Length: 316
Image (cartoon, rainbow, N blue to C red; front, side, top):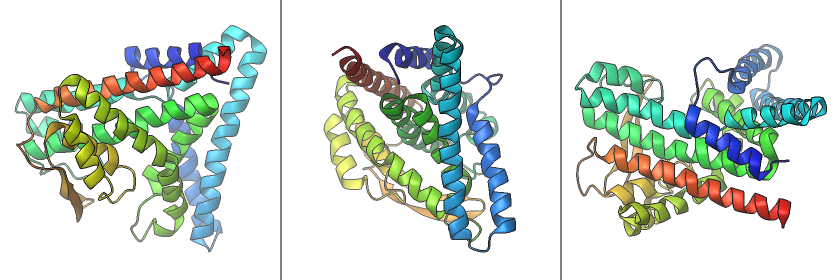
């Protein structure tokens, strides 16, 4: 079970170290399992929809089970070993620092006017085609990615860490991984990925709305338009193709007075996304400072709330 000390350790470690390239990351194993599972399903099953259900259940349940066994075994060896394993495992489910580092890398190249390098850096964190994006379009993509991943990579893992510890948080990451790999609506993945996409929507429903509320509160603190964040979130939050991604994106757009969404290219295909927010002004690199303030302060608010609840449960 997650304790305040373990939770705080994982959060602080993520803030300090982020996601080092040398670090073994469980999501890589999950990704491998999804790839192998997809191959097996396509070869051995005729009903892709049923195969997609089985693939999702096996990967998510297997992730939860393996993490639970590792956690149990580590504490059986020694309390210190268990503590280190759980803090380290929980650390891998959080993405505050890595989200900042990866988005900052794009913004640095934009400020240098090296758009080719910026497009290359951006391609590592977004799914859309980046080869022809303008400066403004790249900044918009970065803001959308930070806003969406504030829910998926920060608030949601914290919630699941608090509720079910490292195993549940890692199982949540498995759901994310499945959705990012096979949860598409195109002809190839529509049948095999429908259940994973639905699971991801369900797992992120509450975290996305918690994120939106926190963004509104934080916007008042940093001097952004908190009222605008609330108004745009309520008005445009459900316009997005995803039932969840639009909530934090709309809150951030309202807080900054900018417009997100619109048409983007994915794998050579034009996709028309709903427009979110009011275009009170053009997006600029200076907006990223506010976005990062919102991201870090939102993570702090969520971490504080989780720690208060965990402390009440353990010591109340």
